[in-house]
Amino acid sequence: MIDLLNLTLPEMESWLAGLGEPRFRASQVFQWLWQKGAADFAAMTNLSKALRGKLAETAAMARPGVADTRVSADGTVKFLLRLADGALVETVLIPEEDHLTQCLSSQVGCPMACAFCSTGAGGFTRNMTAGEMAAQILAARQYLKDAGRDPKDLRNLVFMGMGEPLLNLDELLRSLAIITHDLGLGFSTRRVTVSTCGLPGPMRRLGASGLASLAVSLHAPTQELRAELMPKAAAAASLDELMAALRDYPLTPRQRITIEYVLLAGVNDSAEYARQLVRLLSGVKCKVNLIAYNATPDLPFAAPAPAAVLAFEKILWDKGMTAVLRKSKGNDIAAACGQLRAAHLDQTTDNQRE
Ligand code: SF4
Picture 1 (tube, rainbow, N blue to C red):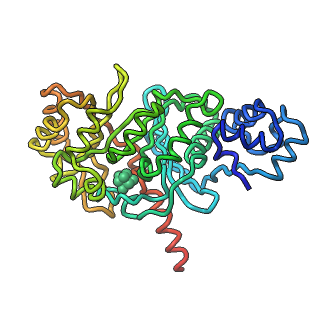
Picture 2: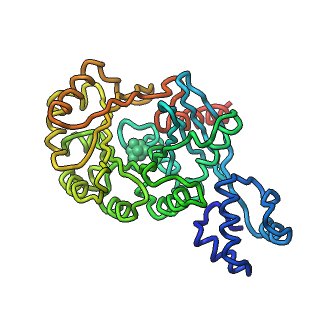
Picture 3: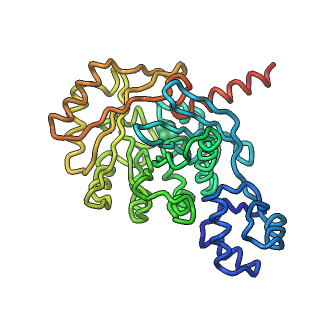
């Protein structure tokens, strides 16, 4: 049975043409699915009864179920979503000053094995489909509606949850087509960011699509340290290759690449590394997001000292770089990537053992 949530608008048009339906029907169904969040075909009242019946017989809408929701004291909301095959993924709503940002997953697990990441430690299960990626937003909008809030407060999206989105590029681009289409989820491409650990080949394709902004998780200014922290990313491309790809990345005059740098105590937070980072990024049109690591019991890293964080930031500013200190949010609800899923899987395994 075909999952209608996994079709872009042109794909929906061809599929409905196969059922003998005119093109405008596809726009109607697409709007019902994404703009109006219809959960069943009976709700699609501007379609004929016969067509609704035909859709119910031949198609499904595989919206994810919510397996768990945790709300942090700071307003961060973390969802554990159950996909149609039972796979679990996480998505997080992060409160900003006057809006919300949603952090989206792109894979079930992740094959990149970054040393500081709970998702990486759990290994890789499968890629998410375009529909599964976009439907995370339907789950968040539904939550906001049920909580009496305006779903339009959700304004920014970032693919920075579980998985390496550029390893799932075909589905990611189809999902971005749904997310940014006026008849789909209607997000401006300026409000969608894809965060990668740095894979130059697929990065070029993403750049050519113009469907999202780019963020790169760097976390180390030398190849040697990067190979320790992000072994697979470092093996996929040297820092020289990565920087060359970033210098060539197509940007509009006001756009900049975001460089993510998680500060880990005693590992990558020294003044010398800050100076190396400045040298490395020369010629790259970027801003740097510094994130103080959020310690988790299962990984051997510690949060940096506040003084080290400030000193690191100051070196970047003194050298003329834009650096922003991002507060980590949701510390009380295991909001770092992969933590809630890991906790849930542990619990399930414990329960199965009992
Ligand atoms: S940090 Fe991102 S790319 Fe690295 S293992 Fe975790 S989810 Fe994968």
